[in-house]
Image 1 (cartoon, rainbow, N blue to C red):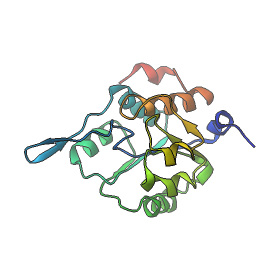
Image 2 (cartoon, rainbow, N blue to C red; image 1 turned 45 degrees about the vertical axis):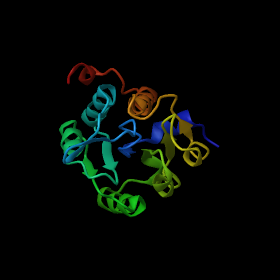
Image 3 (cartoon, helix red, strand yellow; image 1 turned 180 degrees about the horizontal axis):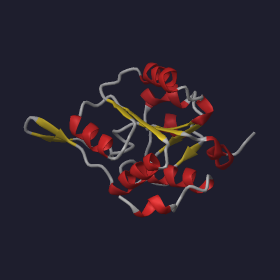
Length: 172
């Protein structure tokens, strides 16, 4: 059986949840809106991976158009809000882009992520994911959601593949 680090060589596609992965899972209720905070280190890694021609998909049950605008601005390939069946969305993206399960690294933190985590080449989660996810995944980041766990898995992948710290790393 191949190790997690060996499997990183096959990754061409990143897929992430938002709440609890790109955010710390806290939802701030303001009058007429919900506010979420995204980590700049995760943002840097997302835009860098995009520049290095990785496909990046965000699939979330959330509805924040501000989050979508921010992520698309970082070069994320597609952002899907209000997704209540993540496996169906995964299969739709797979049909559209033609990637293989083994080429995908997915990071999720809660039970709705499990069907996709079960299919992909590398299943990952933040340190503070729920126990049902932590006990299942190939890799548990030592970093909590919203604190740089996305940067952790992107950086590891790009380092293993020899794509970290290229000339594009110095551009934002």
